[in-house]
Image (cartoon, rainbow, N blue to C red; front, side, top):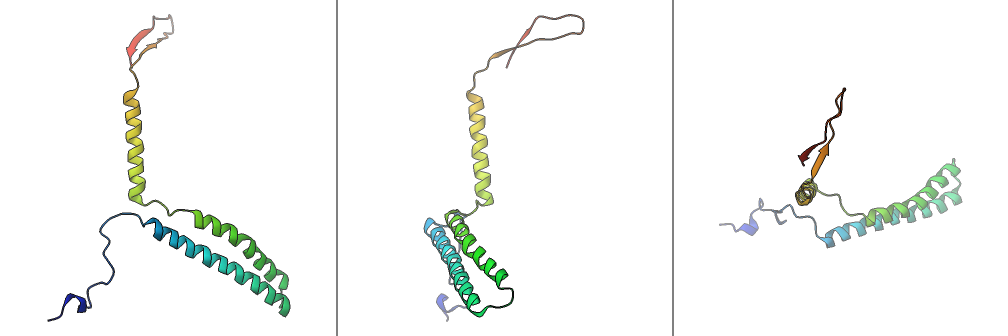
Amino acid sequence: MRGRSEDPTVKKQPVLITDAARSQNDQFRSRQIRYVSMMSVRAACLILGAVLISFRPPWLGLWLVLCAAGMVFLPWAAVLIANDRPAKSKAERAASALEREQQQQAALAQQPVDEVEYLTIDGEHWTEPERHPR
């Protein structure tokens, strides 16, 4: 008789049973990995530019412009991406929209009911304002 640990069909990873967002540590770790990888590409652009200058391949100017663009653009993009939080899920967006709607309805319910005067204009004569509760 085989035990559960020996069964090849049993997954080793835990099963996600909630719609909870990833933990702050997981999000931070993934942003760190993205930042370091983008800065590594920047370092590779610097090294590639130095190698290209020493070998002088055809279209050297184009290659150097591309390397320089990578060295200038990547740090800016890496900081923006590293500081950004993941996009909200569909459930999070729906929950925040429901919360906003409930707040608006509560604010409307708290407003006092005032009487509003309406002026009726007839083509031939004016009538006295009618009082209508709001």
